[in-house]
Length: 128
Image (tube, rainbow, N blue to C red):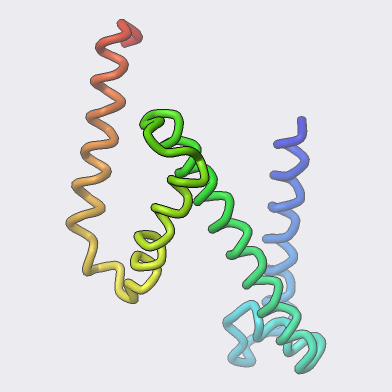
C-alpha cells in the first residue's frame, strides 16, 4: 500500500512539472531550476537547486548502503562499514566520468553478465 502512495505522489509531481512547463509556454525555460526561477524568481532557482542536490545525495547514500550491505552479505570478510568505506573511492571515481559513451562497452558487458547470472541461478535452483 505504501508503494502505491509513493508512486501516486511521484506521478502527481511529474504531472505538476508538465503543467508548469505548459503554463510557462515557450519562453526558453527547459530545466527544473528555470521553472523555479520563472515562478518565484532567484529564490525559486536556489530552492530547486538545493532540492535537487539533497535528492541526489539521498539517492547516492541509499545506493551506497545497498551495495555495501550486499557485499557484506555475500563476502563477509569486511563489515558493512568496511565495504562502504572501501567502495567510496570507486564510486567517487565513477562520478567523474562526464561522458557515458566512454563506458558504453563496459556497461553492455556488465548487463550481459547480470542476465547470465540470473539465468544460471534460476537453472541451478530449478526455477525455470
